[in-house]
Image (cartoon, rainbow, N blue to C red; front, side):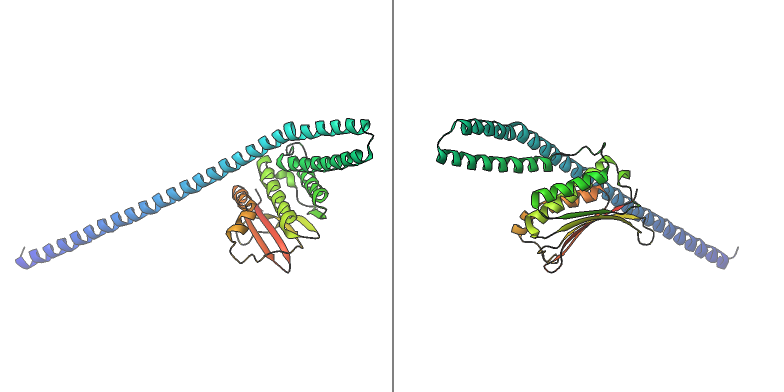
Length: 273
């Protein structure tokens, strides 16, 4: 082998060695990048899981507190009002003074009004028997209860081809609370003449599956939904955060569209399981 051949061989070996080292470095770099992406995805999934668990625990605490308050109101305040009404009835039967009798009747009327409002509060806090009653009936009863309390007509419509009982009990609970909170906001803020609850099935876009769309809208004074809420407004709309958390647990989306001219629409869209 001549010196020239040896130099050519040495150059080729050097080139192959450099290429091999470059390939090893490139492979190692790609491995590092892949590991970083994988770790990031794992952390993202863990954060999402932790966030979902936090939401579930928060709502569970809220529901337990609702149940406890509802029970305490029923066992204490409600029973005290009943006892007070009985005592006032006995006093009325024994009373002969017209002025005192008139005052007693006024107090009895006020206590009956308090009793009615207390029953409404207890009903709002309590959870209906979702497992044993058709969900359509439960929502319809909620709309009728809303009308009885607020005197605002509430229309309810479900698409004939849609079965609401395909939802799991926990899902029904979240949906019911979202509708209930939306109606509570109508009563407290909207100054509406009427409101509606409409549920229908819609086709998802592109590869997304079908969705169930639940809309609660009113013809009230509305607000500018494009503006950021002030701290005072945020406090008065505190229930919105609970609605958004429940929408996340349903794997759905919650949007609110409102304007002073058209009123407010709360839209919940849930993927069909």
